[in-house]
Image (cartoon, rainbow, N blue to C red; front, side, top):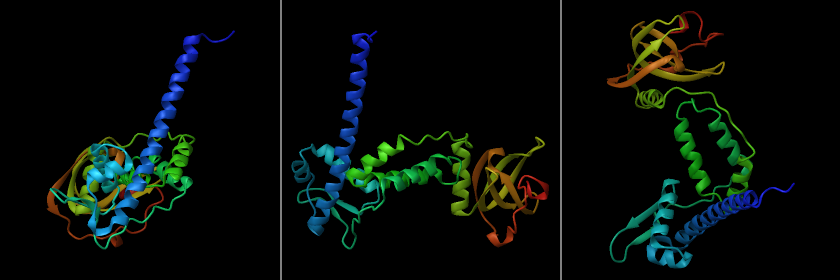
Length: 256
């Protein structure tokens, strides 16, 4: 028995919509690549948005959106408002092509997707998106098709607010105040000088100088219920004070 006509029609519409979306993305990727090449060729003289729009047969608004995407991807683009203004490449800078294969691009995407609880994972994802934005159109299309064949079911991560506070404290080397729950269920508030992020046995740890215990401690990130960055600077403890990690990071005096 043949499926009803309306089911065939719905399937056809879904297929056509998907194909249009793919072609639209490929076309935009091609335009971004060509846009970067045109800016490179024009050198320090630059190009007006109107000229770029005419060249690529799109609106000025679309060109400006594309230029924003290139700039977010790290392209050294300058803009000059007013009559005689436009867009160009910063003098002395270049727009080197990104030479990644489709498999390499998907490998990066899969690695970040599989570790959402890793430190700075959001920044890593943003960095990969920058790379994807400037891939040549054929490689980008292959990467998108290959990405559909990779499925990731990552475990839940610590709340974004907690991870952001830990990342900021580590980067700025400031004391972070955490509410920590031990394996026995005891909750304490600690002021910690962050020294190192570590991953062991499928868990991420914040290793730092605990001012409550006056010693180096390993804190399981998933057991941190709250975190806020203070204005206090760290005291200068280094990774050389961490020592050798224990066989089981959760056991013994190393844990909190």
